[in-house]
Length: 191
Image (cartoon, rainbow, N blue to C red; front, side, top):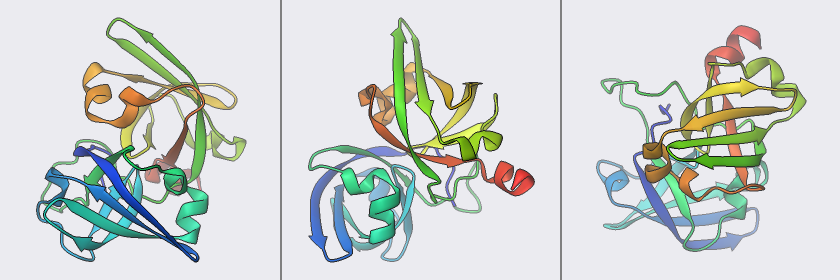
């Protein structure tokens, strides 16, 4: 379980492709603290198991399903990723409950930037419409966000400058693909 509050930006250092599996190596600092082999870490909102930890890197196995159903199969060397360690029962819950189980890959339809204002419009599949509501929670690439507005197949989120600085949202452009996870409470209430 996660909160959607990104702890740091990691950097993809290696992607080893095997049959039905890819091994992802990410350089990190803060996220390394306290993580042990077998622990869960959210990488761009996807729950992965740490299989190897060094002083500067985390390594994860990504199975075929993960590669096909999330954006992690499209990662490139030196690309930044959002990292978050699993929630401890004693931690503050600053975002919302996030499982790290991505519902869909979505596409950024538009990025509108003005002074101290950024709106990102994201398209979503029709089947998720009932779960995405104005002022509701949504997780995009591992970031807990509040839905600002909702249309037929597009929703908007509004970002403060801080969010753009400490997550990959400062790098996002129109046409980029993102992982979305609907609010777990909405899933079970409306499911």
